[in-house]
Image (cartoon, rainbow, N blue to C red):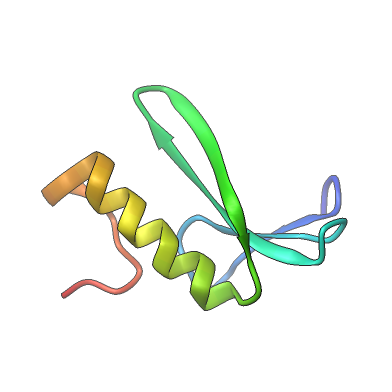
Length: 67
């Protein structure tokens, strides 16, 4: 584990921030990687990731919970 962060083995984009004690997600769009908010659970971060991925990548998004 580097810098107190752990990447989820279950969900795309979800990362645990040990310092904050919360989950967050990372999403890369147009070459820029963004970190977005904090979430209490790994699943909540994964759902938020899916929503952002749909917004920025549309039908090309890789989702945790495809329809």
